Length: 277
Image 1 (spheres, rainbow, N blue to C red):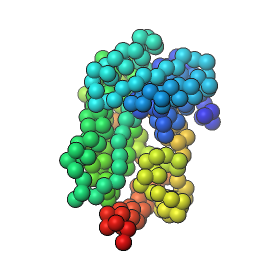
Image 2 (image 1 turned 90 degrees about the vertical axis):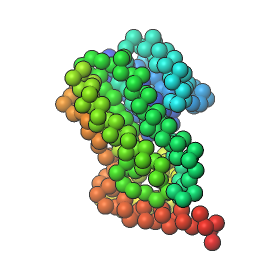
Image 3 (image 1 turned 45 degrees about the horizontal axis):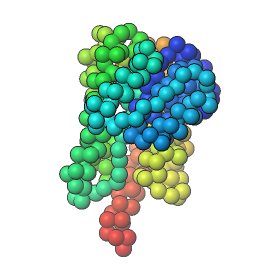
Image 4 (image 1 turned 60 degrees about the horizontal axis):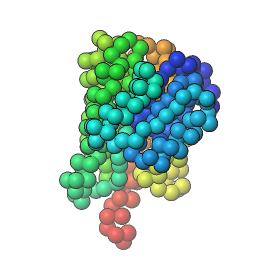
């Protein structure tokens, strides 16, 4: 993916956790296109290998991948060590690990709820803790990938709503604690992004996705490029005085259209829970 926006990250080392698919891979590709050295991580070695191949096809800079689960602190520490050994330092961290599945609260198991909390919230905290000693200097940037569930109640998403609300408060709190050391931390909140697994799960089928687009003030669903461009901006010198921000990239969807779309989603989930009758 070649960005139409002119950002220069030639002297920048970027690590995208969860960066092997969807929005996070799009962000990794955008940084590579802008000249950065990029590392990606996920639980799947096959996805890591494929993502690194894409990055190397974009530029001849050094790109690499590591494999770990954010719930495994020891494996994560080894992954961070491998990246910093290869790059020398870490300038930009994108924390994007996430888990999601639609489930009505009354039928959601404790393990199901805990799984999402462990990946999204505790996992994010552990990723940022690992990064902290490597990024304690002016100019370091952390970008978290949040979700509109953080502030928009959605049926079938009680576990994700709770986790992502925590992620956004993690962003804001650590921006206060770590700002004096020069670390900027912000959250991006993607709206309905076409072609992503998350959107397909929550709005299955072309008809429902068209209805979602109609509920967006800009009258379209977003693209991975929209999110990647925002990530490049937040990591650039142009955003040097921005920290602790939770930034929706949603075409205005969260201004009201989300409520209409979620009402339809609630009906779909209720229909599925009743066995489709």
